[in-house]
Amino acid sequence: MEEKLIKDYSSPGRKGYSLPPLEVEKSNLAENLADYLREDLELPEVSEVDVVRHYTALSEMNYGVDSGIYPLGSCTMKYNPKRNERVARTSGLTNIHPYQPVEQLQGSLELLYQLKLDLAEISAMDEITLQPASGAHGEFTSLLIVKKYFADREEERTKVIVPDSAHGTNPASAAMAGFDVVEIASNERGMVDLDALAEALDEKTAALMLTNPNTLGIFEEDILKITEMVHEVGGLVYYDGANMNAIMGYAKPGLMDFDLMHFNLHKTFSTPHGGGGPGSGPVGVKDFLAPYLPKPLLKKDEEKYYWDYQRPKSIGKVHSFYGNYGVMLRAWSYIKTVGGSGLKETTENAVLNANYLKAKLKNDFELPYAEDSLHEFVLSGSRQKEEGASTLNIAKRLLDYDQYAPTIYFPLVVKEAMMIEPTETENIGTLDHFVETMLTISREIKENPEIVKNAPHSTIVRKLNETEAARNPDLHW
Ligand SMILES: *Cc1c(COP(=O)(O)O)cnc(C)c1O
Image (cartoon, rainbow, N blue to C red; front, side):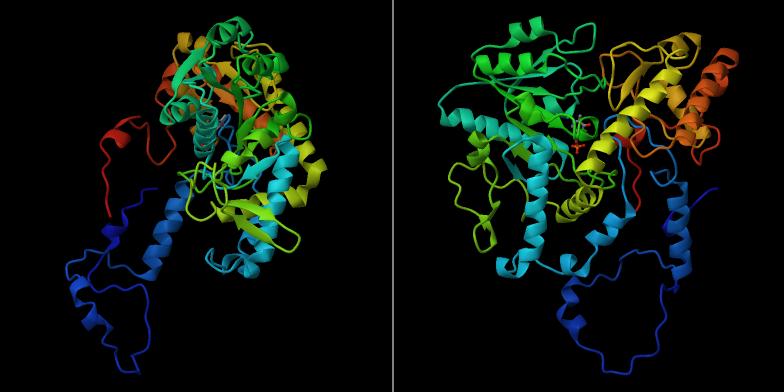
């Protein structure tokens, strides 16, 4: 199935609509706008049918959560109920404007306020801002808070410690906020090495950024010791809460003594994502950091909900208006419809599914860390690489079997890494099908690695140059 570019369907005079002749006098709008009207605008001239068929064809070439399993570790989309879309499109919620007087927006603000309370309950944090637009943006916002907090205390702290298994956004956010990033190695069990941490900690330490369970899916069993060690030198502990489906209903970052954190509403709390957005990365903090949160902060007095701008210590605004409202609505709808017990069940199923896959795959693929893991786990394709096909080849071969690949070559601590997160949504049939496919590919590599090395064979485009599209984009518009 080949699909041309829309401009290649163009034929002079074709139109996307047909209307009866004009019965009213033409306005002179065009005269006033003459300076802006362009004669040589090369837009494709296509019929409505051309347009609809073209974009439908493109959408059918795409793979998404509505096509099949999407076991992309860490960054994957979890459950995206369609009912949330309906809620987010409710006209009373979409036909409003942030500049309307708050008196007219009370219902909408109530939803956001409830979302704040729910996130605070889930995380054991005291105050929440919904402003940041992504996980990385939440990290950056949090680090600005850390910075302001220490500036206020006239403490010069320049270091942010990040374990080598961290998501790449962690060191990037710390560097962007102007900190020196200090990486510490994990121990042989895939957890924070306490000796390495002790060595890195000093009076210059502003914060430790930690994901727990970490990107190997492993829960840091010494977490209380870790947070205590950082606090002892006067530093803060930051929780990367992108993937709360590993712990919701079972553990809370606030109770692990984390001081601040971000959530990814577009991962755990159900907004579809990909292609760069939209997202939402709320930040939660303990009381003592609340004065530094971005302004305005959503508050409630006896009579009404309102935006509090009187926040002299605030780091300022980090997003236009109040953040990505549509994403917040979906998260609110998700939390309210599944309820507390549903969130807990989400965690149980996410962990069960990941462990089921791990048990079924660990004999045929190397499992570098044998520790118990939660919502995701990491395999290595090293054995297969020796046999003639790399992890990248395996990922491409999965496409031939109509399934999406896991996250590959991440975390960096594992060679030929395959990071697998099936999510809570998949049933046992889908999981078994994925296992069978992985075992088939493993067999193929033993018998005829060329087939896997040259995959994909059945997709619209074959193997792509991994960097060419980013370095030399060939754009048409
Ligand atoms: C996805 C993810 C992030 C970054 O979130 P974005 O919304 O993509 O910026 C940070 N940390 C972890 C562990 C993640 O999985």
